[in-house]
Image (cartoon, rainbow, N blue to C red; front, side, top):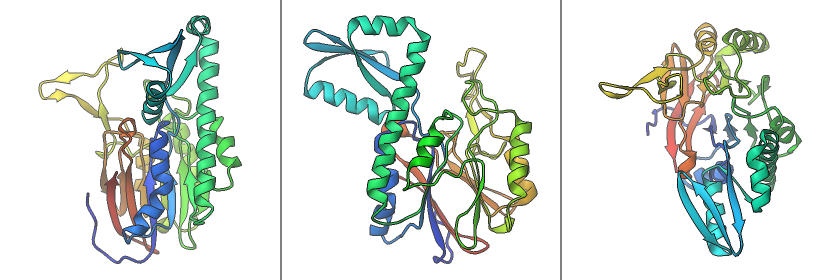
Length: 328
């Protein structure tokens, strides 16, 4: 952790990203303002930068008076009651979507891409709706503004759920007034990845969107860039190098890494020099970097361990007053 010394007034943002369906991490995010206030560091704004939804279904098959499932290559035979409840809780911490099947139902599910997609979408949106209920219950008492953006892993359907929740604001692909002095430009899309994620788009389209939004910013020197994808070649965008079969490449010094960030984001930051860049997307590239006058931060992610990584950053009218990477 690094706390940059400076003036401590201003607006403090708690930022995190890439929770990928982990309810325990989402609860920590929603409760973070109260937690840091109790530590003498009041938070003025909560901001989540994308990739809210999980990645897979964990089938749990009912077999008579017990249940069978597989997680990370290990078979689990579970009795009804506490064992089953603990297993379901564990999968939710991991960000996965456990679903109980009758044997015949599971056989049909395995054979149908349509059923698999339909159930995955249903479970994904149900959990997000539950998260919005949590946000509404816990945020209405303190009145702290909360912004949640989608990321490249999030399907388009999440936007309507975010926009329907009165406790949060979805700033996706637009410029919003963050404070009296600061605007925020948000872009949840990412450059093309090997995984073909729902919001992956070509670099030129990313550049066009950034230019369109930049034209709406009144004072770029006080603007926050909330772009899910970090700037290319910034050291907060280094990921494992994969071969054509998506297997990690091993070199003489171990697992090879390569810059995979967004060139359009890098070019926009270099051109416009906003006050602050808040990014996610690359879980293993936690860190901070300065690109000209712009401080860029990626808090990283360990959602599958139930650990919430975040950034506490305090901004004044025209400069970053303090910043700190945190986890818990």
